[in-house]
Amino acid sequence: MNILFYNETDKQIGDNTKVLIEKAVIESLKTHKIEIPVEVSVTITDNNHIKELNNEYRGRDTETDVLSFPMIDEGKILSDVDLSKYKINEYELPIGDIVISYEKAEEQAKEYGHSLERELAFLTVHSMLHLIGYDHMMPEEEKEMFSMQEIILKKMGLSREANHV
Figure (tube, rainbow, N blue to C red):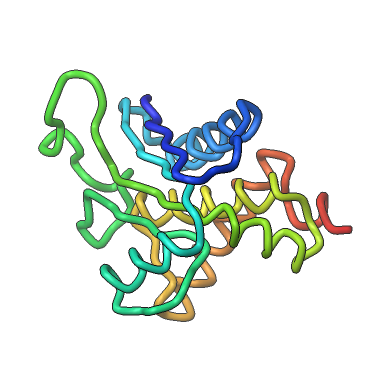
């Protein structure tokens, strides 16, 4: 597995944060039994840049916490897709890009009363689930996706119950 990590902020993103994001990516894949080597790009940015991306790609002129850009979208979960047809090299299969607003993560951690680490893990897992094939446009999809988020975060020791202040 290869995680390409980019920091577009003026904040120092420590190794512990990178390890946490990596664990969220790995646990999301492991939970879905996706065992082939994949590549995921994770960019940490600020509210201004994520607002620009949100406007450009979603037509929403507002900041958001996380954006997901899946490279494989067959309308089903990746573990149900023949991924061999997407393999473009012998190393990793690129499955998509994650863009997280560090500023928004800080704001939301404070608002929800939990740690920044828990919020960053949550946003990474949420985005990974989009890359894996989940969505939350319909109520039943939302229920399934949000349940899966909690399962993965609980495996990481970061469930809401364990981290509520």
